[in-house]
Length: 167
Image 1: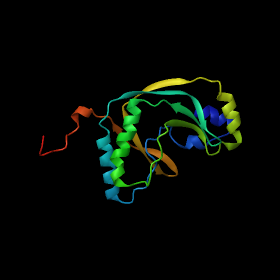
Image 2: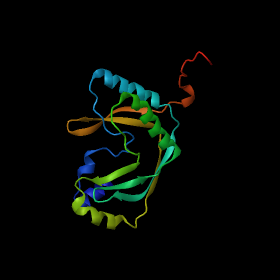
Image 3: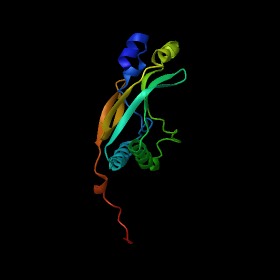
Image 4: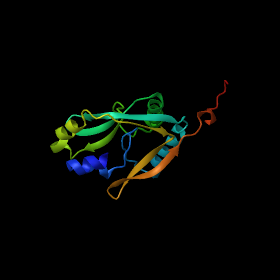
């Protein structure tokens, strides 16, 4: 879909990134210790059940982004919440924007073609679904976003419980 749009409308920025649903905005880690903490809390957030994710139809943020709608569901919303909660104590960002799940098909260089793309896709229907059983971290290297680490889901029932004097 991204390649078709890129070829037909001469928009190429979205092809520079892997297709993805952003669960947490990009951050800069300032030290090795910060990186260790970051990956430890993400590993702890991977205690999650696999879920079915549905992509359905097309939408846009006016004039700058054309995308596939990502249907919110309990699994996705819980995963985003777990990741955000786990990373919050690290204070990597000042304030996280409201989670608006989408899969970008075209952005940045889209402005000259935005209306044509929207017109072509306005009556098209699209639906695909897939199983989500992991999440990934990408690293910006060599002027590109590259897959860096994947966290496969672990059974939530196996998550170690916090020790307590009162249990």
